[in-house]
Image (cartoon, rainbow, N blue to C red; front, side):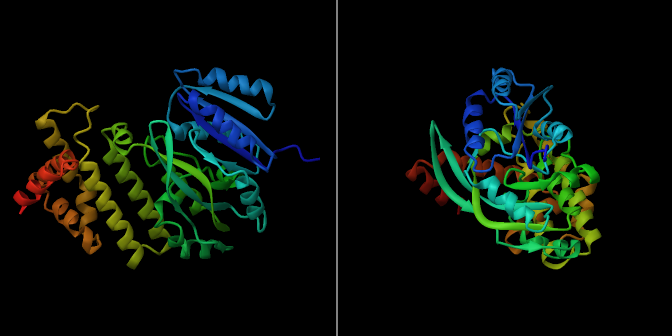
Length: 357
């Protein structure tokens, strides 16, 4: 008789009392029922922990972990350590998913004992209390059954970062995570992408479906960026250095793949430089300038640019970073800020474009 669940659903919980009920209802609505739920309370300051424990008292399939705040990555790691399922799932607590998601993904995984299953997602924007569908991102229906084929065809998954980087639209074979020691990093950003590249690095069989099961709520970008740490450039450098090392080891860091990831790194560096206005950092004018200077002078970035190739449409960012043009960075940033402030006024926008010429 089988004692262990097929899927361990690990849910990080941080100040999520208003989302927990919908999350649990979405899980209970699944046509697939052979699962356990692991709620990981990550130092919530609201009523989340009490609610999780209340749910656990009513359902033996629910386990609650209570830990100090360490971020979603550390919460998922805590869940991995006690999970018993054949496969791992990592939904976000504020999203929901279609009733057939876990049944379809599990059946797909079992067709050839796949290590990871990819699926698509539907995206919703949030305004006040309303959710509005915006778009869907699909995978191709693909399957690879050797490590060589998985790596050779990696760009089938990687370019679509909205599909590859995230953990919530997948099933992961738990034995791979356990035996290979694959865990989420302690970084507060890029931890999902780093987990996925490490997990994929240990995969021998990969499958994807062209169906979209997961419904993801897109949070306000400005609000999300306010939470970024001041050492975000360190995190970006660590991620891209790690990623490029793996792609190089696979023998595929060349041609289109090199172009894609070199360009992605340049964009990440440029966008990170432009975060100096983060109100939570509270930097004065001189500190903002120094923040940009420090990034432009990072040895890792200077060395990377010596051999980097970028798309023509992103060449301007490359040149600004390579030339260490601090004044250009600040000027373009201020111009973009002004444009955003004027965007709602047609007359002022006409004046803006007139003087811009």
